[in-house]
Length: 418
Ligand code: NAD
Image (cartoon, rainbow, N blue to C red; front, side, top):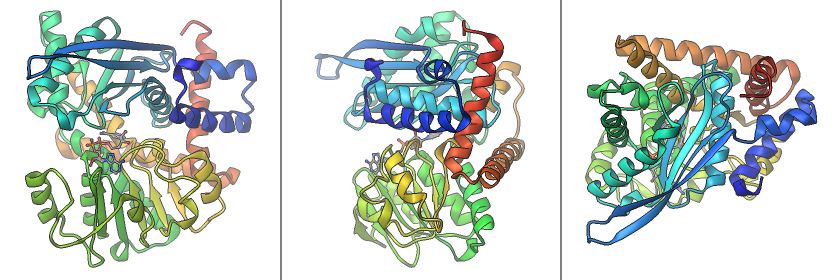
């Protein structure tokens, strides 16, 4: 399907095809599993603050409708394209199936640069997008959540637009909302917290002492900053972090509390006084124990995979490692990879909890949320590690094969329609 033509979509298809060969999925079932069930492209005209009108392209891709509503984030970024969104939707399907959630995967995005827009412009854009999506979303149809460039406030605007349209409040239309509007305790921290939990499990597995471990985090946003703090709570020393403007490094460890104050003030990690400047490329090649790519896709490639000097790659971002890089990393047994569909699943797991709480209007405390989150991650971790070891296949292959097999089974049981 040419409409999805994009390097990230090709990458997701390549991963799928390798796993489909391994699982011996018949060829006439593959396209049905691979291609999104439904994709929407919308034109979003808004008034800019200077009085001009600008039209932004918006997308939503619903990959797999067999098991229940679709679920996935909404991204605001200048590079958003339909094919990228489709790849992210596909990965969401495997991730939800791997963790046993009653969802198919989805993803959305608007091609825009939120850093160059005022709050009121972002509000107009978000409300317009939600309005255009109303025929295709709903608590039992498709539920959105934050991703790169979106946050709790964006989810609050979406929830309000949908609720005003319906004439009553519908908190379960989005997850990752502010707690004051029916959001879940622990949702904002869930992805980063899950990344650190699984990195800690990986240190046990390879016999690394977390209290002596060093970590480097690419992308100090929602996921990366919480992952860094959570890793520090497990005892690791965070020696480098970065954002889209560049990175910082201190071999003795960064003071994350002071760094957070600096980021709150300046909106970037760059210029933090107690560290030296490094580039994003240099960060990925730093000698460290735990490397956390927590920014964008396709950061670890054939060009740098051979030079990476860590023991664990904890993939907080979606699709940070290309299949070509995987081939190289699979020849380097000293590096343990926690693949994205497992590593960053904490976010969608607590989104699921938020949806359940909203549907029941019965809310849980943070301890209950974190406890249930870790139980689900532990099960997915154990299943993936077991398959990886028994079948002597890489962790990514094991995680994807578990997810894809469950989706295949659901499709087979229901028939051709969904
Ligand atoms: P965010 O917008 O809060 O943060 C993204 C960070 O990455 C920012 O610091 C940004 O400056 C930085 N960045 C952007 N482009 C970069 C580049 N080219 N090089 C280095 N840094 C760059 O987004 P987020 O919600 O933290 O998402 C980060 C990653 O985690 C994405 O891949 C997203 O799909 C994935 N993810 C997010 C969630 C979630 O709950 N938010 C859940 C699962 C996976």
